[in-house]
Image (cartoon, rainbow over all chains, first blue to last red; front, side):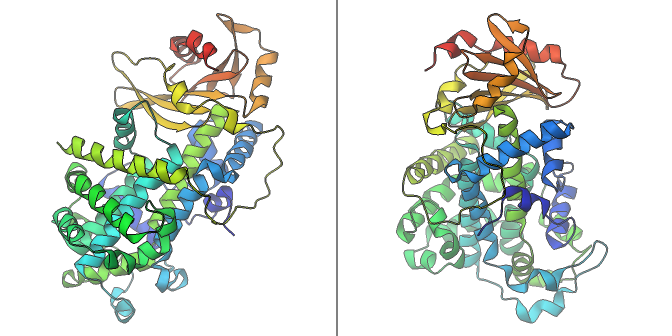
Length: 296
Length: 165
């Protein structure tokens, strides 16, 4: 049974590897992300309302909207969770750490299996698709035409922007290197149906992604979508000043690693963070609250 | 060029998603939570499509920019920015799904044209059109005043909204 959105936001951690990794990205693109924890706190931040009665009414309507599964919010959370859960193998307990402590990455090396470029590229592709689909479940298709819809996505900020940065950094730049966008497209063009069928991320999230669980349909979608997204994805890092050196420099502040083991580092980050769910739940909460106060 | 490619991708995503959304409910876990039972019936399916509501939003001029941010059944939302800073949220909602939203207008003495106006919390000003559509402007910072909220409410095409069935 999945949790209600207030429980999810109340339960978000304020420290740990996920928060540390997201803060690292916020260092690089300053001021974009605050780790907003607590549903009432988020209501106050989003609406500017402090009166307990008003906050309570917004809360009640937001929960009502979330609980109506036809509204798409639960589905978006499910996508984020499934995309993250695949790699939770190291377990939160093993990695709980406090700010200031440094993870001895080498001690996990025997438990981490790096993946080939092809598998990394599929993961990156599926995360980008998952993000686009979740956006639509949360916000619909805003505006009157594609121009308005694009404006809405280009206006990504806060949790949305930091999550996109995380996808591109942790699933693109670190495992695939600075040419990750080109590699992504090359790998995706050469995929066949069995590559998708065997991908653990596809297995986990296939019922929630376009294609209705059919690998061939999903592959066609990925091929078209990623071909078109190449420039956006490649340009994103430049636009936001995200560089491999910059990321690794920041990361050395809390993880011990060597630069000849970046594929291990990428796998380690996948296994030890749940950044999609963490920021995804915050995005859902923000949109939900904004709508709730508009409707009451 | 990048923009065009991105647009193509998004059209694709949107189209497939819409196709998928229209089909079969999945057997995903239903959320059970201690939410108080709704104090009013929800007729969301009968409410007006968000796309119809978009057309009554004001045009942004000069240093102002309007970006649509949400569109759901019976609800449309846009962010208003002045220069680079977001200053307000503009929404239209169909109160068929949330009739209790009409209550605050019953005691309202203020009107804009023929439409009753009421505060919604400390940061929002709302009016009710045709006893059905709530139009609201909410400040994202206190610097965007109640007077400015009212001024932006007036910019909506309220007469057109009143005609939407």
